[in-house]
Amino acid sequence: MFLYSDICRVLYRITIDFMADVFKFKQFEVAQERCAMKVGTDGVLLGAWVQPTRETYSVLDIGAGTGVISLMMAQRFPEAHIEAIEIDNDAFEQTVENFENSPWGDRLFCFHASFQEYFQEVEEEYDLIISNPPYHLATQKTADDAKNLARFEDALPFEHLLYGAKQLLAKEGTFAVVIPYEQEDRFLDIAVEVRLFPVSITHVKGHKGASIKRSLLQLQHEAVEEIKLSELVIEIERHQYTSDYVDLVKDFYLKM
Image (cartoon, rainbow, N blue to C red; front, side):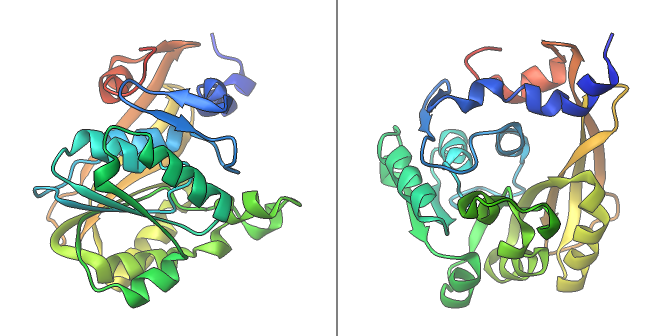
């Protein structure tokens, strides 16, 4: 049986092992001691979940953090050239280190810049754009500037994220994000305004009786007649994971 407090924290209990200075995946390692935001469930879910609608040869990771999503993309798409953007200096340096120490260092590159600067200067188009963006409200800020930059939406408002993704996304490309469920409607309203349309939405719950915590969204330039809707439940009970969750992340986690 789950206690109510367990339900509220279930997505975050899974990330306890992520707090180590180096987190080991099956095919790569992620050093994270200099990053304000460590490897977490949200990014790993997004990296494993996204299903591009075309052959993937170019990827852009917006807000790389530790670089974990870029590394997952390099593992999943062996022909792809992956570029990442990270504004925080320590996280940028950590990402570059993780890229260089991976099996795919020749296909991974990180820019030290804001996304706003990047999309105004770059003319390249990408088959896949992916992001685990900051989404906390300004009223929740702490005294830690680096953590605020990684966590709070005023560093990268949804309007800027979606407008920039629209400019850089290839004609038949895919844009994928993970956001809090309670912000899904606002995000999709902005997306439609810039003419990006959802094709796939997965709602994530800690367990079957819990409320929805996260939305995994996949968007593209053209609207579809029917959006693919699904639900992902992570645990059956404490530390016993559902087959859907295991199938999704089994190529990455050592302990599955």
